[in-house]
Length: 305
Image (cartoon, rainbow, N blue to C red; front, side, top):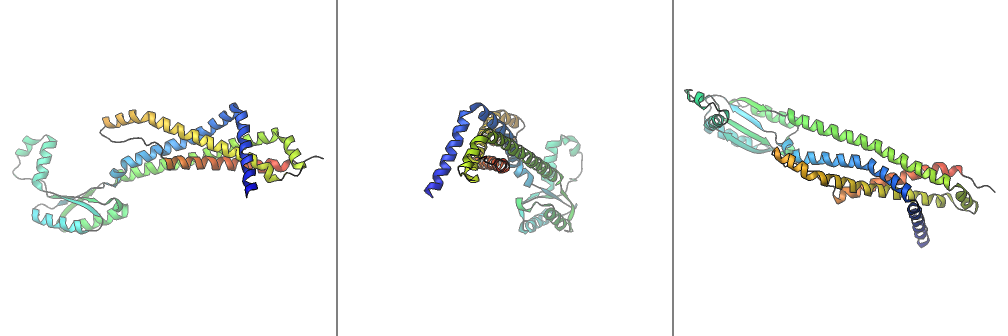
């Protein structure tokens, strides 16, 4: 076990030393990998920020129940109690006809015209808000059928189209990000693989000598795998730094813009967990790209006696 660990440490140090001796090419490769990882990471955090900011709105599906004219207010309150007992209901508010008329008078500006009416034309109503985990289309439809079946109810109004559109937009953006991330991941594999391929051919004579004296394929391949691993880690680390810097610089302007519209929307910076995931993805892509290139090209090099 000690010998195995020593060989891997030697291979890691050897790979790090070669990268350090070629700072320009190393920095260029790391920068390209970082850019490829930065784009999906940044857009993913942006979508998460939007989802968190609109999560409460998306689950706030209010239903308004309008009673038939002449329904007593006490009976409306009794029906509100029945609605509160139903599973999946978060809140039920009773709005009397007088309160509805008063609110309409204040908001519409037609106070003088309303004074000419002999009676209040507005009915009593209930505003029902389902729980966040009871806002699926099937659950809303079931609640709508339950409420409209009451003989005292004239109309049940519910608008879920904007919720469905919001979810559809966010789902579309998530799918686009996943597709873009997959394409850029393939690009990272190609970058690392091509870099390792050039490294192998530049060291062809050294590899032939190593194999000639008995070096195994695993021994020859090990430094190249660590090279790919280091490329992936460095690229992912730089990507995390770029994402954090960009979002931190945009946080104040975006916050001021959102505040001007009365919103509390704020951009999220990457957490330690998200940085860890990004580093793991970068390391995995680098290692996979190096393994693919090494397995393909090292097999073509045979020692010449």
